[in-house]
Image (cartoon, rainbow, N blue to C red; front, top):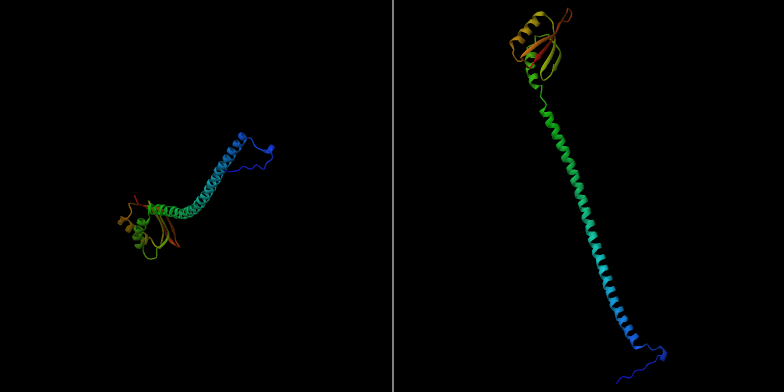
Length: 177
């Protein structure tokens, strides 16, 4: 049998109902402390997990930034190449005066000796030619050769003058159409 010793003075003794209430409050406090510690552990775990996740996301963000920068430089190069190609196509689509140059070569090759070619202007639709002939027979022979050659569809005399010192100055315009 257990002996109960009460060392407290008689006035300090807690009544039975209050003792039960204190015991239940004490057990409730222990339960609340357990819940609080569990909550603290949960919050701490969440913070650690969030920190690890944030570090991973920061690394992923840096990686994506580096990829974007490399893509930007590639895109800039592609845009420059497209621009260059557009300019090349524009230049290639520009009509050439090479055909008129080839035609006028035959006329210039038939110039009499001593004739001076002073001006040559090429255009898509016309070709201007300025010549100085030493004699009238050279001029006559040249005009006869131009008349017999049908490289251009039409020819027009744009200027004609005579200087006894230099000879005949003639301006001709040849038309493609």
